[in-house]
Length: 225
Image 1 (cartoon, rainbow, N blue to C red):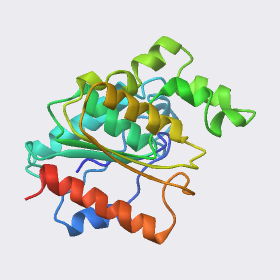
Image 2: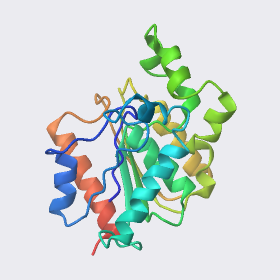
Image 3: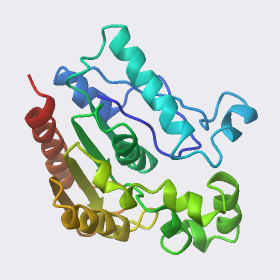
Image 4: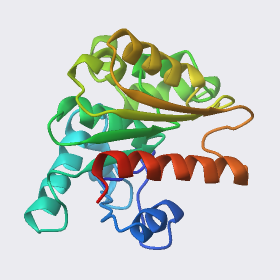
């Protein structure tokens, strides 16, 4: 299981993570990557991810994936990529860029159309929102489009699981719907779990349990023992 973090300009830490623990309990090796753009390694390292959300950041995730295979931690024939928020974006973008690597892809509360960040969601509602996006994402619309997996689902080989909250303000439901529509248009296999009155991630216990069961069933179907 490749589990890229959200943000992207945050980082993973050592410590308990319920998603990691759930996957480990089921026997999956979990790879977490503090790719370029992550915080905690100096400002130059963080800035190295600016404008490279869909390119060099995904290259770092791929290098970590290859390293896990080389070290005997991962079985190259049974790998899935799964993430939340920016991690959900990475799950789709990496599956688009490296279609033969992953047997499945799970996007949870993900963003799939980078241009949409300027028009939908709470980032652009802040006074600093557009400036933040211009700096970290890059203001070239053609580049944003080229790094948006929603436009390249024809390159996908991995079946997809989409999980989203209808009331998500950070990554609005329009992202999930746009991805679903693109997958439908291309007749690409996917599964869908959307919950009303849930935001950027699920918070109600029943919904969390349902999502976790959906994730584990999906994984068992494509990379299980």
